[in-house]
Length: 194
Image 1 (spheres, one colour):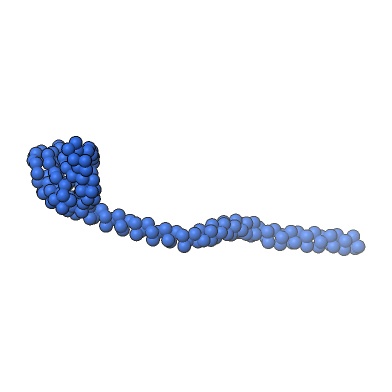
Image 2 (tube, rainbow, N blue to C red):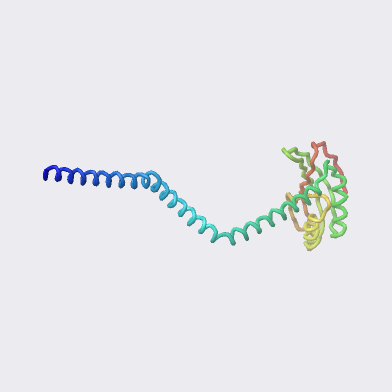
């Protein structure tokens, strides 16, 4: 019988070892199946938290930059609307000449030889260059050029030639090219003089 008892003891120990192995296997499999992916997900979340925390450190600067850019965009939009209000539907060079003549009178600049060029169609607008000659001194010229910005009609100085008058030392002979803009299809300009 002692050999039976030994055999039973060995069998019992083997069963305990097998049971322990099964229990260990049952404990490890869920960890491997669920724990490792969760650990990887936790590591990914920690990296995202760290990245977000770094970004949040810049939040005051980003907010200030956003507010500055928003204000600049609003200012540009306001300026764009103001310019569009100063661009008529048609070239109407006669009205522009009247505005120039009034400005030149305020600046004491003498205009002459008003020459509208051909209208040029662009994809979203039309434009026309207007050349004219003028006589005056440096101060009058500066006031006239600065006054162009205050005209009801939007225009741009596209060219300026200044020559000293041979007869008077302070007098200047000017040739100006002004570019006017309008919305409609170009028509043939009419020549005129002030």
